[in-house]
Length: 418
Ligand SMILES: N[C@@H](Cc1ccccc1)C(=O)O
Image (tube, rainbow, N blue to C red; front, side):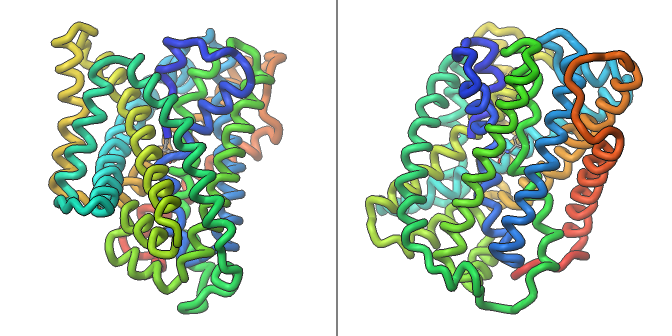
């Protein structure tokens, strides 16, 4: 869903807790969600929920550690300033590169997922397109919105957010009623579950990523730490609940053995939604589910590419005139779109790589910065995350283990469900 980082800069949303919580929930819930049932099929429901709980906790802690550091600086200080002032030039560069990488690879993931889901929708209307072309259409339409202005993105994502909430409850509510408890609790297929946990860890991490928004919340609320803490807690908790419902809805309706087929077809969004569509009796609710998936990936695309657009404009010094924006749009959209045309089905692979890079800037760097800033400001009276250094070590370990799992899975050294 949307990454309202830039929306915040331009439009005061009313400084209630709810506004901040929605910004966090909006960024967190996105395409990563569609990878969860597919990569969780091996370990199935129980372990998936346990995994989500653990990841939620670690990602919440790393976000709060980031907030702790951020509060030592003036509202408006960016990631770049925070890393430069606490960890120095080396980490500043590593951090900047990893953020840019995540934004680029997510843009590609959304084009791949968007192509897949647009294709699934068009098939419902009797139109057949190659998936790469559907991805191109998806990218071009949404890129034009980003090109027009930040305000356009803000307006459209707000509408999409409303649409997502409505369609999510309509479609998922129905799927939740129809679930088959035996499918959920006594899965078929091979009876080994736990070993598949490791390869799924990176996808859980990507699904709970929101950390780019922490500095924007500080900018938005000022140094009101208790409201920001609540906004992060509530926002990520909403995501946790949505993911749990999503796992119940998918795993309670699609048998585990059928996930093998979904995985064999690349595990892309359209394939998963297609499998769910088959079990839904009402064609109207079916359309709601498809519409939800379209909105979820489109709003994520807008949020993330707007972040990338501003980042690249700043990096290359392109101005905000018409020609400047067109230049920025070219460097923002052309590389991921070409990748989307060449490899239309890299959705899962891209989410995995996004997670690998996110371990750096969303987990390890925030933990190290908090450690360092506690030394730099020993007499600081304000907010400090509980748990002292052991908690920092736990968060770093979580990041390192997840990154290692991604690399091991890439090298085919981890058990993967197929
Ligand atoms: N959580 C987002 C992806 C994301 C990762 C890291 C930071 C920001 C966003 C999603 O599921 O689509």
